[in-house]
Image (cartoon, rainbow, N blue to C red):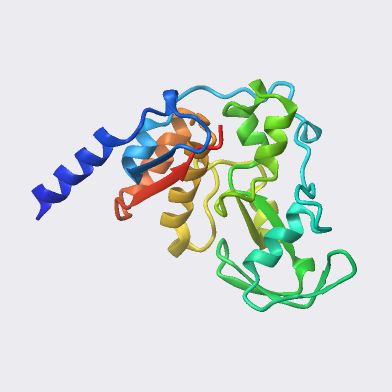
Length: 216
């Protein structure tokens, strides 16, 4: 069985399209460890990074709900009340970072799984303003943005897995897998310490397949 599983893993890697030749909308499936290995490794630079380089919480579909509120509506475990154009109240959410339920939207932040500053370090510094806006408001892949407690989001800040992992240890495998999926989707690099940290986490995790649709 182990030989067969290894053969299937190798086949999945061979059949996966090369990210360098991928186009937006192309889909790739790889075992998560292979997906990590496929990410380019590069040193980071935060020179010139400011939050206003990323226009975020827009209302792309003009339904009155900003990106932030769209995530809250999508992830609620008990639906909030909605008044006016898109004012939310009540409702309930689960924050997997710290294994906590939150009543009402005020105690929540919407986290960019790969923080904006980290994305700058990893490649978005070379993008156009429109491309950075698309990244900051990505609702087409539910893994890019997540509602979590304000405390856990502010503890994380702009750190990568080399210096921050969620307090809830049971979530570490999913966190690492999702981090890799987001970086794959947007073709972002990892730095050596980040890659090493992710490898260490994945040693304790199933080598599950990751399916990603390229955004660019």
